[in-house]
Length: 593
Image 1 (cartoon, one colour):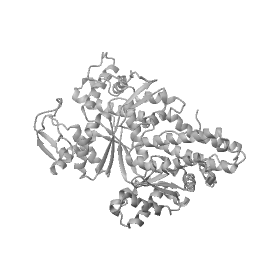
Image 2 (tube, rainbow, N blue to C red):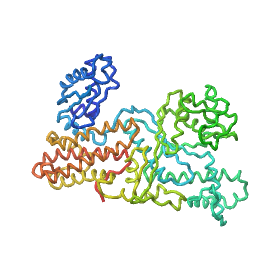
Image 3 (cartoon, rainbow, N blue to C red):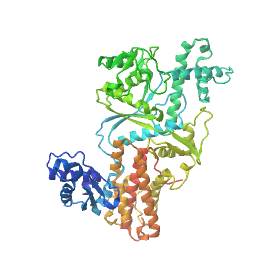
Image 4 (spheres, rainbow, N blue to C red):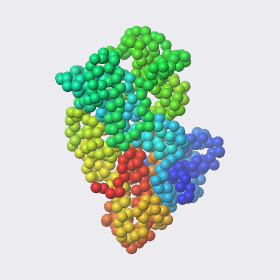
């Protein structure tokens, strides 16, 4: 059994055996695509459950319960199966032999850092676009959540075998960057000694633009003052965007986030290479663009509604509620038109699997972008938009005051500087992305079970503490270096691990690869955070149990063999915690300070 487990994780192995049994019962042509194996909701029902009889009954022309009994009879003959029960209308519950779990532990120790890696992605290219904050100021705590989510999702997909590109879309072509330029020009005049007074309404008031003004003054002296706005605006805008993007990249680096691609919206309309116009022409040739009028919106009036003949995309043909404008009344492109061209560019670069991570205020934009992608790719690309909800920043339950430097929000850097990268990243992922997150700056630095990031990291550190103690007291030749220690523990007599609490921990370790695959398929990295907390909880509970029941201690001074077996179990925990924390971008410390 152990050799098979090295190449196929336990749930996949059991599923392949269930498939083989079903094929033997129904014939080789049976459709087994909906047959799954998963942990039962109630652990008392067994180790694994399958829906095989429920989904195959129609094809087998049998009652689900009757088919379940036939499949169960075959499964009882399987080497790894201890018992099989049929429940309810036809669910099949399997209990596996103890040797299966100890063999699974051997496989974990032999695999080391490779444990949990999957090939389900089969090298497929995936584009994950996240953050994409407007380059008009420093990143705030709301951007932080989308940044961490997107980065962890990219790492999760890589672990599952996908070829991932991390991308940032720079919105550097809209009206907001012209406002940025005018705000920076004001700071430029200030840097030259002018008293600019109060920042006028409609411009960005934060002090973060003062360095931009100083850089412009150093570069241009007073020459910009003599220019008309049409001349200085592009110069100031380019400088301001460059400096804002450098600041944003610095903020992201504080979270250990780095993108592979920074894609400029302005590049889509570059002189001589207007890809937005080309995309509109492409859609027009397909009959998906026409000149027409839109009906007035239902309900409350919309400020930007114009009752005029305009260029429209037939979004309703592809599932949207209304057709969408592509040109404004002044002839410039709508933001949506640029977005269509941008997503077509992704497809043209070979990405058929797209993930966009957006803020809470963009939910109403999903349908039109999905419609556009169907049109420009001929339904050959899949888009999954993940909405990241708001973050409420608290301190001991009270809302945190705004940042003076930024003007009206708390910056990402302030939060990271106060509580650290690890606390920020873990807690941003310890709640589903579409639920509002309360982030309490006081709670995330507590050293208690109520602080999940501490509790999980402490599990990893406790494992290494056990290794150090074992080396001092019993196994003096236990290697310190990870690779050598894995080789040392690979031959541990893990068959001696038979206590129910130990077997429960082994079951938890064995489910990690399946958790990775399920989380990657659903694009839900929070599942890894939840799993790690549960694993750490079981590990800490078993350690605590050993204080009251000496025979369960990890280190038995007069039994080196049992100590070695339990250290292999500790190694399994350390390996999985390090892997999962790596996916989340959180450190796995060997000791807590």
